[in-house]
Length: 412
Ligand SMILES: [Zn+2]
Image 1 (cartoon, helix red, strand yellow):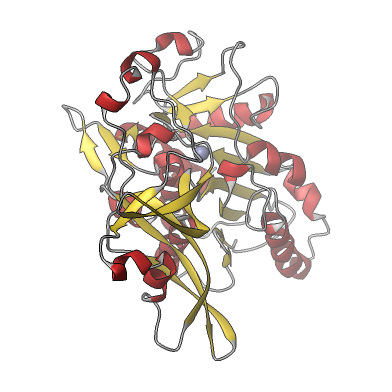
Image 2 (cartoon, helix red, strand yellow; image 1 turned 45 degrees about the vertical axis):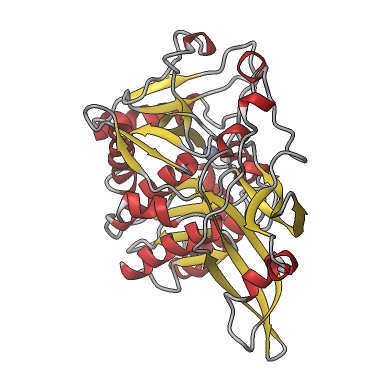
């Protein structure tokens, strides 16, 4: 699965799921092993035989990323321009969205013959949120650029100089994506950075792209799963969950019942036939989940932002994230499992904790670990510019993560 093609195609959680699903179906994964719910996807490699040694090996990542979503009634008009009101989604770095070429994409729901249908779309035009010129904001370099997300982030999408242009609504643009007998009912459309991913650095050692958090992890999991063999006794599970950036509590988020109900379905379907005589929770307590999400690399211009003994660097290997306040799911035994896995896969690792005087982020790890009772370790690739419209990783860390996951999905 080509990494750059995936980064450029997965521009909304729905597109992430669609791209992943295409890759798995092309590789022969069928209805019994691919489960989809909105912006989430769970793919399973079924074992040859289910017996008392059967465990689950689960790799998790999220399909969503911070974005600006076009609001339900977005149309506004000012200074000869039609603009769109947006709602912020997730912890955006607002300033990074200014002066960028913005594409728009999402899911349209329509009425056809009295039924609701839906279609993924990706618009062909580029819009923009221009910065205020320095001459009109004299203190900006001294005071920093402050962005009010309510008033400063409307996106400019067309001139309204003619009467026809001024009367055009954005819903008309979306309706034009549909067939003549299809009538737009609702939409979930967001902006994305239209610039394709690039290779960077003097030695071509870095990748610059939008959405690396967390498409990078989704890609690594998919790559390992697509290249895995049929396991002897274990279920291999790749879980791509939505809405992590807003707390995971949704129908297709890790705080919903999608993963749990899928595991129950699998266990009821295969273990009872195998006459295993163990409950799903007993087996999960004896299994392992890798919660894979990006980690903060030490910023060369801001080394003071890291705890000096726990400051991962770009290209230094997969990061093990731990937190005494349980913002990460890693515990002593799951961390030990991870370290052993690194040793077997010959992959370097680095350890991250947050400074005590700074709050710590979180992942789907604690949610999944607490609700399923599965030992879980939080890991991921180090990155810079997290939650910017355009982020940065080292390609070596991505290769290392894939090797690690191939091992986890293989002989582990
Ligand atoms: Zn993330």
